[in-house]
Image 1: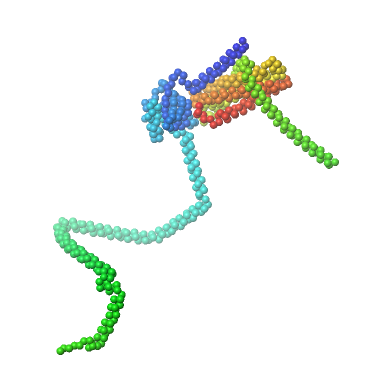
Image 2 (image 1 turned 60 degrees about the vertical axis):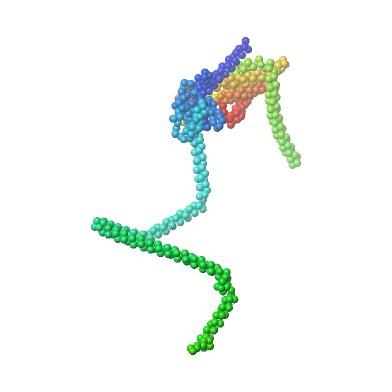
Length: 335
Length: 280
């Protein structure tokens, strides 16, 4: 009897605790025993910080929860969600994964495609995920953690740059910078002096410019007067005379031009003759250089030159002797 | 005169050195004896598991005594733990963290730590002391010797049923404590704090993992195994009448409590460290 009592007591305790535990688990995990919920599948490239059990929200109202998250082929991630059967999805639904609070909670929001935010990246991701039948396209927003991480990287880079600047800007650099500033100061002073020195020149130039402007004005006035006269002349018939004179001058000019053209033609012929002459001279010189002909032999044969030279000496002495004693060589007989 | 004095001094020094060496050797031998005794005890217990016909009829009785009888104290501890946790969470979160995190904190701490460890410590006092005192009394009154004379293996008849009952029933008590702790934390949040039921449930479900329950139950089973083994060993080694029984009960509680905390750290290191919480 005692033994049976023990068995019953332990059995009841074990069954009660086990049942309570399982029931609690089922309740907390929102187990769907009566199939009162339906499955919705979405695919995204990255789920961010979305976890199993996170809420699925439609127009801000919790309509279900994320059941499983699994890797799919071609770099996709599939998210299986359980939604209440009574909830209607938007007409063209897409899934956005985003943070629901600053404490690391994420949620899956089912939105209408037309109501998507203007973020180009999100729209691109949704467009890329679109196409598989029965699977909602999805995209995830960067979380606060990722943004903080990027900000941290930027801060680290800035600190790195600051450190490098600090390293590069040592005492020597400071001295050089100080010297450069002094040089710039000296240069500035020099420029200032130069400007002061040339200020009078600039005044002179300005005065000349003013006088030139006055002259231009006067010229303009004169031109205006001429224009007035031309106007007057045109009205009094002088302009016709001027035009006639210009026409006559133009005829004379045309005649002179024809004469010039004629001269140019003759010059061209003379140039042709000159070319021919030069070509002949060139051939003669070639022959002389090559030792052809008398002149060539004379130029190219040194013995001939020496003989000619001695002949000239003899001839010169002969002429001197002839001048001194003409009778020796010339006998004049009249009769 | 000087030579005998020097000889005496040298003799004293040598005697002290020998005594120090003896002390070190005695301590080492004692520790090794303890280790050997524990190993022998574990070996005999393991061997006694084979004697099913001896220990099976005793398991249910022990399960009722150690498990069902411990439910009230386990539930009581868990109830107040849940209430206090909710109040502490509310006190810590006010103005900075959303109040639904009260549900998260209560569930996580109760499931992972407080229900197994506090219940284990309480049962170490109740179960460990009970086993040590019972077996110690049997030892000093030579009932165990009588059992051996009658052909019963005391390990199979006395130790194994208690170890099995403790290992199986500790998770039952801890499971009930988990439910009670969270339920009382919920009630305290709803009644005493400005946290609605919906908020508490939201926080409860937000980071809830089945693994948390599994972890707590496995841990509590290891606590039950350790507490019953320590109680049985201390009881079987009791000597010298009532004083020895008292010492056995006290040391059983102390060693059980220490072992529970060591096992708690062991499970945390081996099972929680580096675990991806998104895996389950």
